[in-house]
Image (spheres, helix red, strand yellow):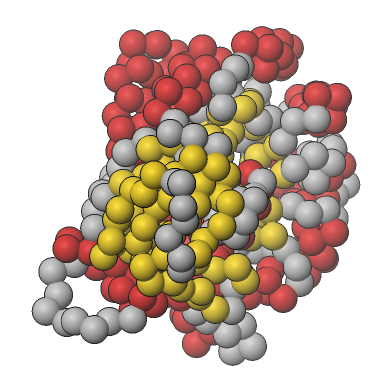
Amino acid sequence: MASYAIKGDFIWTEEPSRFRTMRNGYLVVDNGVIESLTEECPENYDIIDYSGHLIIPGLSDLHLHAPQYAYMGLYMDEELLTWLEKHTFPEEAKYGNIGYAEKAYTAFVKDLLSGPTTRLSAFGTIHADSTLLLMRLLDEAGFYGFAGKVNMDRNSPDYLSEDTDVSISETIRFLDSAEGNIKPIITPRFIPSCSDKLLRKLGMIAKERNLPVQSHLDENLSEVEWVKELCPWSTSYSDAYDHFGLLGNTPTIMAHVVWPSDDEIALLSERDVFVAHAPSSNTNLSSGIAPVRKFMKNGVKTGLATDVSGGSSLSLFRVIQEAIGVSKLRWRIKDDSDSPLTTSEAFFLASKGGGAFFGKVGSFEAGFDADFSVLDESLINTPLDGLSVNERLEMYIYRAADKPVFAKYIKGKKVH
């Protein structure tokens, strides 16, 4: 159906400070793009009627580890580096077996399809073939976004470490083989797991092919200190990435950014780097509370991330909850100049804020891609009536975060 109109109750954020709403409106879609949102029933369009349902823009997950989905919800009593060594690396090694990868990634995609996520940027593993499989499964399910073959050639277990030249050649093979709506993204795991030679070459490949980059930055204090030891010539973790051409030379996502200096925040803003704020993971792995208010004040582009399986849910509604909650704690116990996030601000980060990495995504404005989810508010089971559209969304976020959406459309196509 190339052109149609969706009827329902709409809520969205064109800017962080406030929600916009429309009851009994009509979202006019033409060839996967929003033409208008209007109160008048459009003529000469097929009407898909979701009257009484709340409809939100598609949400974007800026950072998640698809191969960690299998053990999501386990091993949360340890901090990052121990957690990686004891649990993450052994699990990711299994993805050298394409049969295991297909079983695990199929379950991951099925779960992701039932939630509010429409765009994503995912880490695979060092295995090119299983990462290409992940991309194909996501593409067939109707998703758009990015996935990357991970690079690791030092400070990694033998069973999950590549020879440097092999890592480079396999990355090129991966890039040359990728096709579909899930695009490749350059993915050094983080500086401790990648040699200078590998980082330098990945920066060159990203620039030569105009490819985006994703990695981790300033997640954990022990990690930050480790980077200082590995790159004693650098002024910061961010400076080290910049040295290798991996910080904003092409579109870039840096996940976590819990412990940045003021100079790093200024550099991230200058380079238009997107921060993937992952509050659930930062809490579960005792990493800390990222200074999101400082990012917003200083013009750092910011979105939200589940970081599965550091985060224990694929639902960005759950991440919205956590982003608001940890911002309150930071304001109360760390810095009373960093006011807590409001519901509209956190929702903006999950929708239009993070969606900007993928283009015109995450709003009901004309010209934006027609990504949206229809919510089933009967799942809330409240006796209250007469709630405003804003109140209905807030209650859904807190009471039905992990419930399946009623319907989901990506670029105008119904996928769930």
